[in-house]
Image (cartoon, rainbow over all chains, first blue to last red; front, top):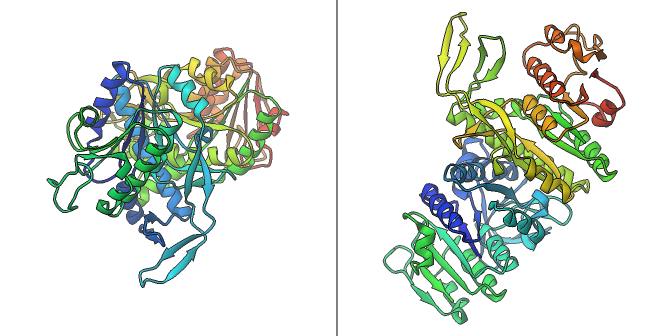
Length: 268
Length: 268
């Protein structure tokens, strides 16, 4: 079993991702897709006059400030536009895909953070309380198995659902890590619009090709911005028994096959 | 088994619909929800600078002109905002709901109309070719049963999928009728923002309370605008063996229970 996370950044080649996915699925590979949608959420938020805001936690991680209106825009893009277009592409390529959010069947369940401590733009600590974000702690594994065992290919997207039943924005990379752990995946492939973990974020040729899993925490110092969550997800997946995590490029042809053949940053 | 269709018109009380639904589900009633989203799709289309267009077929039925951009907006509202908010409300009320579009698992499959003959605003006949609309002809009944048998409550939304794998806009009322026929429902309840079929569309007290199913075609003369599709759906469901169709009000408390107790227009 492999779990593939495809980011929602600019330049992602969804046609290539879904072609590769459909071929692997047809060849009998058990595979689950988890996807994002951040870039298009930003665009729609701007168009609707509710521009995106990002906050930095006291521990240095960036996340989207998700009030209720942002959550609705988030759902329009993640669950509406992107999830359904991915499912449509997969169907056109012969894979009988089903798209589910974490709310559906309580697929991805977790705690909503009732208060987030952030550092504001002037460097002061502040507490945010109207934020619908959280962290996936529980996966509805029977539902996943029910659908996989009946031949469906799953395309899973945030949001997740809180234990109280509220939709919550969760990080897609870390959600994919929890899914990979739950299904006991051999590999977690995290595709985004860069070739992998870079020594120098401005230089795509500075790819780090191998990381021993004992050093995954240390590799965090090369991660910038949103990539920090990917490294955190990788660490969590490896800790929970996933054998290998690959950070790879979603902009190339056959991006999943490339990652499976060792392209990108392989952490094992 | 009952199938409930809730419209996407202005004034729909989704809290009341989902409360009633969750209670009936908890009491053991087998139930499927099919929903719309037309009103909010119009709002978002306006906001995004791609205003809604409606066309009237030569046979007098109105439908949304659905080019690819409209289809994306349609998916944002139907599959994103409305479907996920309904699923969230149901989850908060204790029902383990799953939201699916007709694309997911080829749940609702049909032909895309490659050309629609319309009457334009000047009364001339024209042919539209870039329209992604169609009609549901096939339901993935094994998928529905798989999820119902495992205790999930289904919230189903257009679009459907063409046999060629394209997302297609289909009428929600007629889709609900096809679902009701496929699952051999006893009743199809069609909720909208009017009390039922009215003798005079401007007078809510002119409700027609009973129609013998032999006269369902004749009742079409009381249906205006979008209500024509509801009557057409009712006729199709009854013809396929559904025992009773009720047109009822989605703006009241316990709208489904009210319809089950005979409120609205009962066609049997």
